[in-house]
Structure formats: structure tokens, C-alpha cells
Length: 173
Image (cartoon, rainbow, N blue to C red; front, top):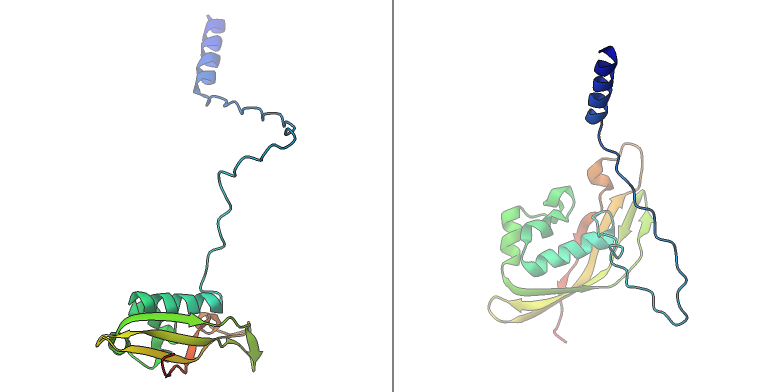
């Protein structure tokens, strides 16, 4: 009887174990026939995401937000959570609501360093239509900067952000 009890316990213990899963063996590699075309990749590598950690991404986010009428996101690209724009959220929105449409283009320049900071200063051209139907064109540099990686720098200081804009009205071309 002890043998039956031990065998029964062994079977019960084995039944409580998770089943082993079989891993299918990889298919053997085959030589491609001459002139054969490689199959399309089904999971292409994703493009590198644009993050706020580059001056280009800050400028692109700002431009896209202005073009879409997303004043809050556009203002947030300025330093000190938008305060460096010199306008409150309501003032910022009011300043840009006079534009019916906005289109922004900018030059590609490299980041440069000066006195403990890195900066990026592309030439920006903003064109579009005012709410009264009049076309407009403004041109000037927009300075995007951040503090170098120095001990004691805050997260806000290390973040790329718009520090200034010198966009000025220009004649339409």
C-alpha cells in the first residue's frame, strides 16, 4: 500500500508541474537561387524618435505647434516653462490668434558653444495670413540654448529651449 501511495503522490506532484513547452527548431538556412530577391522585411526598424533633447526637435515642436494653433505647446518650448517668452499663457495665445495661418521654415545650423552654454541659432522665416486676410512675412534668428553639462545645473537649465526670438516683419517676396 505504501508503494501505491508513493506512486500516487509522485504522479500528483508531476501533474502540478507546468508543462514543458517545446521550442521549435529553427529552419535551416537555404542558399538563395541566383537572381532571387530577398523577401521584404516585415518589421522595419522604427525611425529614431524626435525628442526634446535636441535643438532641432525643440524648433520643430515649436514650429509645428504654431502651425497647428497649439499655443500652449509652442509656449512650452521657451525656457522656464514658457516664462522666457515674456508672455503669460493668455498673452501668448492672444498674440498668435491674430494669425489665420502660419507656415515656418528654418535653416539648418550646427550647435555652438559659448561661456558655459550651447546654442543653436537658425534663421527662421514665418509666413502666412492674418485673420483680416492680409499676408505676412517675418524673418529673423531664433536662439535655442541650454547649459553645458556642469555640476549643479538644474534639469530646466540642461533642457534645450527657446531663449529668444528676433523675428521681424519683412516685405513679402
